[in-house]
Every structure is written in structure tokens, then in C-alpha cells.
Image 1 (cartoon, one colour):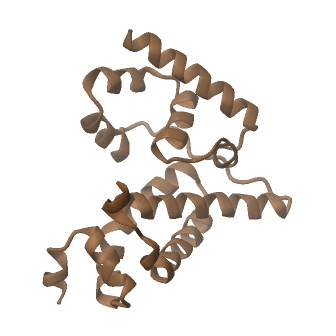
Image 2: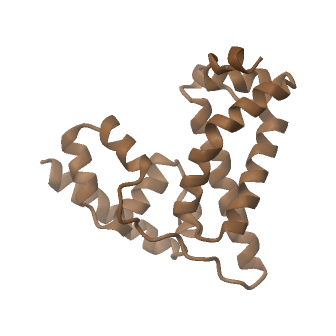
Length: 183
């Protein structure tokens, strides 16, 4: 059965999960969980929070797979999964803040290129990719959260642990820097 599922794309697997197919869910988890975990760890250094978010994410996927609209709305299964994971991470930060414990700061920029940066470099044209790479890390983080991950200003502020005004300022500075780099 696994070889049969290994030929399916993620969107088809989500559709099978919506019908209660456990094997499809296991295959979807096997394919996507390493990537989701890496992205979460780049935003949160606390392994316990990451593990909780992973569990909540895939529980949500199991329960709400029938809500996935997919390519009909221009979405992808992996993008849908990441949206769920990012929102669960924000919820975890809020819970922790509510209990008067400051969230563990987002992980610092790694010394080696992250997988998502490499993918971004291949997807985004050379000129735009170069401009993104030249941005200061704090500006790039805001653009990544708001543009690539689709988070709101408030969600980005919670994710990065900075005030909303700072997020707005950094987003404005990033847009200006990108405009100048591309002109």
C-alpha cells in the first residue's frame, strides 16, 4: 500500500486523509513532518514547544482535511500544512505569554543556508533573490513571515517577539530596500 501512496502528490494524500485513510495520513506525515519541523525550529528554539506544535498541527490536519480547498483556490497542500503549523506556533507563544513566561526567542540565523532559503533562491529570480539575501536579517524575517508565510502584523509580532509597530517599521524598511535594490 505504501508504494501505491508514494506515487501520489500531497494534495491527493490530503483528500484521502479527509476520507479517513490512515495510510495516506502516515505517508503525508512521513513526507512533510521533517520540513515542517525544520521551519518551526528556525522560529522557536524550544524543542518542547516545537513538539507540541507538530502534534497539534497533524491533529488539525487529521480533523480538518476536508476543509482543504487546494488547487481550486491556488493553494498547495504543503502551504496549507505550513499555515496550520505557523498559526499553532503563534498560539503556543500566546499561551506561554499568558502564563507570564516569555517565549524562547526565535532561533538566530544559522551559519549555513537553510533549506527554505535555498528553495527561495531557486524560485525567486536572481535579481530579487539577491536583493532578499542582502536585506538585514531582521527585515528578511519580517518579509518572510508576512509575505511568504502570509501572517498578519500581529501574528508576525508574536512570532518574532517584537512590538507590532516594530514589525510595521521593518516591513516598510524592507519594501524600501527591495525597491532600491531592484531599481
